[in-house]
Image (cartoon, rainbow, N blue to C red; front, side):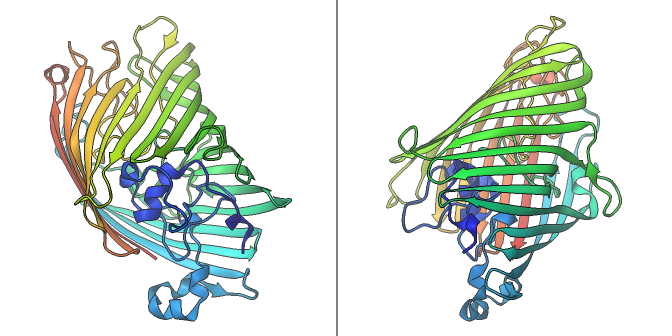
Length: 493
């Protein structure tokens, strides 16, 4: 068995619990906490050297997959589409795994920028194609690649991350060095995806064809049942117009370290991470200034489950400098839920999400107070992606129902306020200033309906609808109401 299979779960269950169950990030709020033991498979670790998912199950993060099950002739007979997932090249630990993905994603906004720009209606059909290879050379070395092609059809307004010709979205090597029986170090040089923590402040950008990817070095130290240290020094990728021409952005860098205590080590049934992120951006834009930004984030993330309750909370404080001013900002995100007994019809979970991210309360005072996430998940608050995690307070009571084992519904109203009246709202995909409401801090209300249908482990559908109703203050600043509809069909093998 490869060395990366031997180590315990990471504290990142919240993000990847949903990926294991259905490979859809939108269900994370319903999947907080560990699965029951010993009946459930382990939750995959989204770090180099972490344990993979249950063998034979496609994942949202393809490099967490384990396809040793496909070496069994009976499995191959029952799953002919997955015959390429295990191609023996010699001994059992020397094999090639070949997989793929095809996703079509239709989206329609009546006002994608909520009136911040003229003629901001948009619709598009995104096509994401992927060819995945994972070459296992020894139990301690494997080389992963993900070749992608991305197109956008029938777009009213171009979305750059939807358009990228033939390109290696990911290509990296994992080299694992065991240290005795209870520890290992894994180094990952190359180009890779890198969701961190609960995937909110540093996420995937799954709302577009091309996810966030980085180029550089990532390393992980794991001490079994006790500790994990994950460190990285990377640059975000620039998406260029041709084939095989994407490159690391020379004007940005993203470095950081996360220290994670194993579940239950410090608090019962609770996992705790502390982290430091360092972001440099040569050209950043806020409501009043554009300039060079060097932003440091210091945070703690806590997640767990106690009986019928699940919880996930994260607090972040930011320092640094922007255009000659100092940065002092903070952010908080949380998700609390209560699941009724499994025998209850529809298996309801009642949840509430509360988020707060600071804005700049005083202009021209030498301090920027606007919070800015390093690489926020897209979709953001909802799939419409109207607002970013800057100068915003969000309250989302929601209800999750499961009419069938393969179908999950989530619905509820979502309320938004500015954290300070002295700053603007910020657009979701770009984090550029959007509307500056007049008067009240209340921004608007979104009514959300989400449906995720897992037809098979390979095929899934997702539907998301938001009716956004602008407040009078938001309208007075030039904003408007909007509707959003998004639906995707995704096939992975």
